[in-house]
Image 1 (tube, one colour):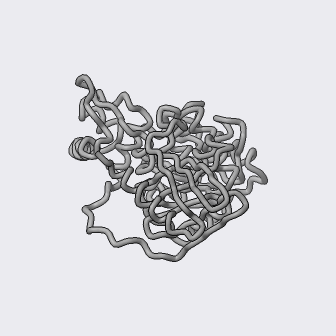
Image 2 (cartoon, one colour):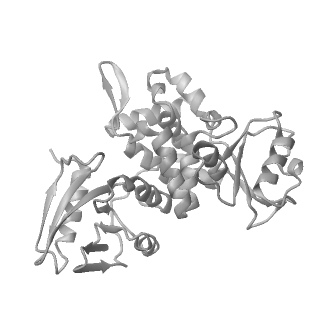
Image 3 (spheres, rainbow, N blue to C red):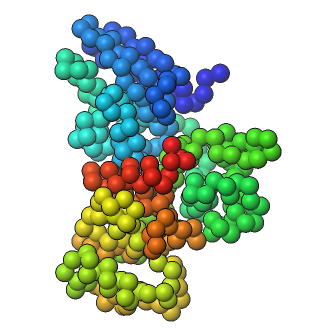
Length: 343
């Protein structure tokens, strides 16, 4: 039986067949390339070329696209191609800057076959889809965050799962039932298990960028500190142990991987009545300030892999939202080292 993901892959292949230099495309839906959704062989009048396929059914956002690019690095040196529902002009430019091949259901695409053939189509609108129900919502996304960070919670009572995720019991029960209907959580030998964690991760990354993060950001600020090291010393001195807080983004990534820090300092703080973090740090709001203060998406945000670092899953999502190449490389390292169970 053809799954919805297979349907997306097959329809994208049909779009590639419309390119004038493509004679045929052979499709393998059961590849041996670790984690790939498919492998295609593109046949032109002068050459044949294999591509590993990364298929994304979730609406493609900038952060999700950055995540795909980071994950696809594992296929090197084999070329790869992104299959998606729709790639708008801004994302098409982002993918082109990274020399990424892609195709969507509307026929927007970018495909390079060796040095002999190149095709690019952009600007086609997305196909109209039937009206869907309400989205997951922020509480439902907090549940996804908890399950992805700690899959063992699937064995816990709903009351415990809801408490750890920071959601209502009814929200936890409804969202878990929805995951089961989608086939993303199955009962195997009486135990619930995540079946396709990467698809759930895609949902979380999309929701983090578009719904969760905008609600978490308190603001950008500037202090009198001359560099990130001085700013970090101020934060550690002024915040101390009076409230829950943790490094996020590049500040956390450097502690986790020693690879990249970046110019921004992201700090996740708990909601603590009577404690004004901005006043403590003597910070002034600034649209280009290097200090980013954010609330935490539930209690699990502070379960870091190193002291005073946010949960690796939260660090990973924040790095992808940063959008630059070094942040993407750091995100890939965090994923490999701490989130291997989501591959």
